[in-house]
Length: 164
Image (cartoon, rainbow, N blue to C red; front, side, top):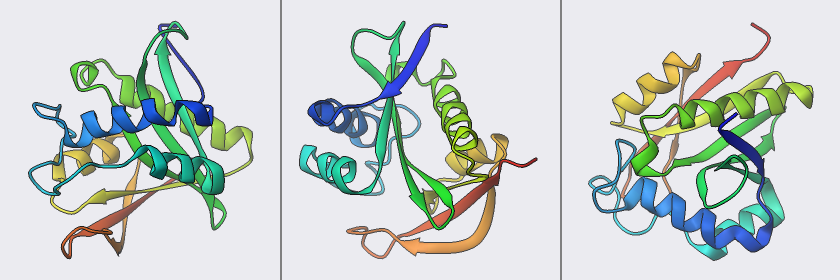
């Protein structure tokens, strides 16, 4: 297996923040880049540390389990489901199925922990991204939540039932 996924220790919060900022807001970033929609950094080291300490866990993929973090994802248990957040893939690697690898990891993790549903949010107007999640088996719930610091923008809620 080329990509090995493992839990991220809190002392690597800076690496998670840097990866997320490159993926979502970096110049010349990949197809997940949303800098044209939302200004400023996607996250901060302190924000990642807070998420890790109080709310959930980050998992990261490294090539053969070593070297720099190439993808990361956040999982938090909410209302009987796992919320999947901040899926970040190194922009230069976004065409190598690494995002799919991370989502499959989330599904396996949930099933191992007897959680049958995953939820996530997608920024409105990110139709290509929502379509990608739809191809992974996620369905729009019709619910939306406001994007913090997003000038009135909304996030669409998607979910996947892992029971088949």
